[in-house]
Amino acid sequence: MKTETAKRPSNTLLFAADMAGTLLFGIEGAEAAITGNLDLLGLMVLAFSTALAGGIFRDLLIGAIPPSSLRDWRYSAMAFTGAVIVFFAYRFLQGIPREVILVLDAAGLALFAVAGTEKALLYQMHPFIAILLGTVTGVGGGTVRDIFLAHVPNVLRSDIYATAAMAGAAVMIAARKLKLSHNWAAVCGGVFCFTLRMVSVWRHWNLPKVMMP
Image 1 (cartoon, rainbow, N blue to C red):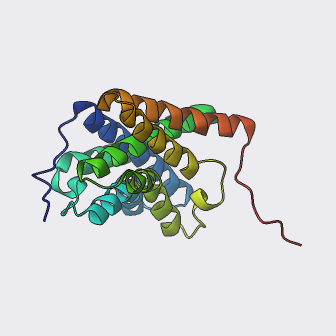
Image 2 (image 1 turned 30 degrees about the horizontal axis):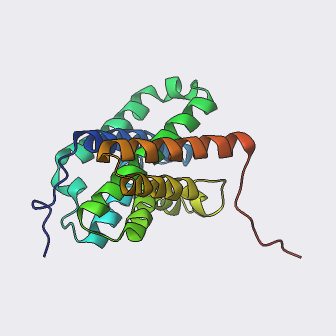
């Protein structure tokens, strides 16, 4: 059985991406808790789940047990830091333009997609499965957040989101096949995911739906 110790990622760039994504999604989850009229405990729970659930799902699926976000206190600390920021500075955050929030969300999605894909590759997953696991890392937390709030997950009905994560992960895999370094492949995948997400918001792109009669 592979162990977390044996396969712990040593890439500083991707660890930094994981931390940054955790903070951004922790803030996003805490803001959703306030919108849902939850108390302080609910705010902490949503911040934690939004920031870390996707990575926990990924680690369970690849056999990295216990998940790295539960073994390393820094992940939880970063998620709860996002919650504390929102709790004490929510009025300030309300004044931030929606466009800025969308940019930060797209950045968090890109960071998690490439970090999740890299983690899957470190565990010798097939590249196609690594793409799927990178997508799960990016959207899993938001899906859990919406379920806690009794909403249909946005990832299943909103504009290009999970597709952007999947495309970014695929670009990262392709870049590595073209012999780019791991860091540059991650940058290419992250930039592509971020760009596709932002362009889809700007152009109001959506995946096709079945038209009801």
